[in-house]
Length: 366
Image (cartoon, rainbow, N blue to C red):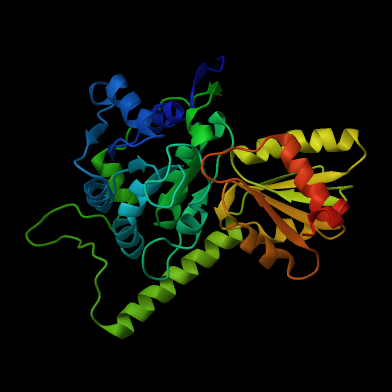
């Protein structure tokens, strides 16, 4: 059977992949630059074909709490938004994590802080990877750099969320959400029956059965000793995720004198900069974290063993650089290059920044 190849935006790929995964529900609210997720779902009308619920809620707060309710019943439910909208969802995301509920959250980042700009950014890294809500919790965070990965990470995000009973997030930037590329869509899967959900998710709320028999899902625990036990269980789960689910891409690292670390669309720009640098005889490699949490500390540490310097390239003021520095400690200098406000650097700017920091450092002295 031939692959089904389509030309579409990254946001559209999210919607198509959700339907084909057999998702039970989407609850969201429009905000640039991710509104096409909801618009595409509404146009495709999956409630008539697969039975998937698609609902435009009255706000982002309502959306995430609808996800909370759907996830509590064992359903595969999701939402999407952009940076300010995800800020509004943080309390609900923390509740999902504390209740050990699987769900998929898509954040197509725009510039901030505040309402900021509708143009692309990567400045929600801290919010996603450090737990933007309250408490000691993590999300599994996947960072796509292509439209194909936007589609692929829907299924992966759901599968990981159900495997570990924790929310997962696709953290894309506005470039990936809005650009158009060829994508191979996954085959259509059947939605799980209620009996399958009961078997796969014995913890799920199912209502009254046989009198008062039911499950209760809550994030509240008034006994401190019990709450500590709950948190210890969460941390064991996170340790298991860190052990088993680290994903990254490393290229040109075998002979590299310098290393770039970048994620999402910016990694693609950096690859072009590396291509031009190697024409000049400057050997640069790149590590692209695919999971921003769990972060590929070991991969970066290994790639950096013989390099003279690391340039962390991000569409922000410097956030992932903290994790890169943790990876290598003080064994190699780490510098940051980033643009903000929706300005996207070109490959020459990236190469010039690396030269300025490591090859001609005197140029950077003021």
